[in-house]
Length: 250
Length: 250
DNA sequence: TACGCCCCTCGTACAGTGTTCGGCGAGCGC
DNA sequence: GCGCTCGCCGAACACTGTACGAGGGGCGTA
Image (cartoon, rainbow over all chains, first blue to last red; front, top):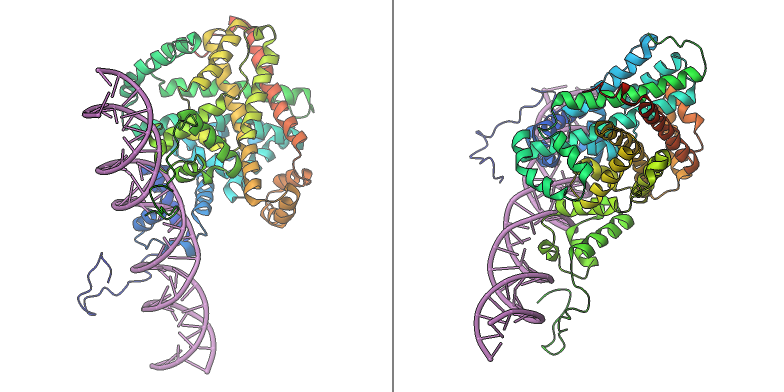
């Protein structure tokens, strides 16, 4: 006797309708998990809640997914799938291609801010989408004239910058969403605390007061782009001083 | 009647000895939490286990710490306290100072690899140690000739690079520790999977085979230093250009 | 058409989690 | 000596991830 449906007799019992939907599968589980995370954040992801949203029992996912950790790996790779991979002829303007890829990674993370801590937990993975992204970048850079080792470094450094920079943006977004307030309200509310906390730190205080109005999204994207250009500058100089073939930069 | 100590009579009951230790305090709680995390990893941190290690009840910490999340914030700032802050006369050789600071941040994170995901959850905080670090960097850079906005960018970019780069190293370390195997064993064991997964990704495959022996710590620190020099190169060029391009992003 | 098998589903159960509450008992100020 | 405050802790609550085993629908084969 379950508590959520009282069975009066055999005749009123709903004959479990199978196959009206493709039922459960790895894909729909992961997709629904992403939706749940987008709507309610990382803390709200539990197997029971996810099962309920799928009209499934709490433990029904375990025949498609070994554990919650594995589910998270799949979710992360699913999000990797939203990032823009450099196309086959992107090497003609590798600067633009790398920049577009970096911006795509950033905006994907900001669209799913809960993923930032997960990236730190999962680390580098063998997921197909994550591999496709790295492979695309490596291929493009090698075609643009970098050798294997250089391209490896470039990808590492570029992604380290993008992920590091975006993670702090995402943490800010997450905190704002959790507080349920607008950015202005929140800033106004914690301002006294900031003022008191920065008493002994004049440079920090000046920095905070300089951006008192809060960080608008234009300022944030400018910050990001500024550092990105910088990193890409370094990239170009390495290319120029390295092998000198195919170094036209559009 | 509790289950972990049978009270025979009033006389044998241990008179709770107070004040032999400074009892519980925020500091000893946080310090013990760091020790627990170092020894057993992030998944092992629970209020009950922490209480047991402190010879305290499960909920005794709640008069010193509001919640587990707050405890984590304190733990993170405690670890920030281990990072090397540029000294007052570091501006004379800001390159060396920034490099030393970056290396210190990296090695601190690698000493406590569990902290990498936490950095993504906590985000920028008002903790005293975190502020001391940022303040020290800002002060040094301004004294070295950067203006406020430039120094802000530099700190952001540098830390984004260091944290992003180190996070993936830390994830690797964490995974290795969780598997309980040596790096060679692990590499040998997953090698067939890698070989099969990289079937369609020739560049990735070449990268993996190139570093087949596994990544030694020398290679890793070289990778890190390579990118760090690169970032600092960009930093220097910005400084040399001075105010000519200074107001570009304003 | 009937049987048998397989695999998906899910109720139940277990060990553990963070956190609240209320009581208790010790220390300190008066 | 008295009372009050404050730190400590046992019990309890609402959850969590996951193992297990029973049930039953779908499909291949007879």
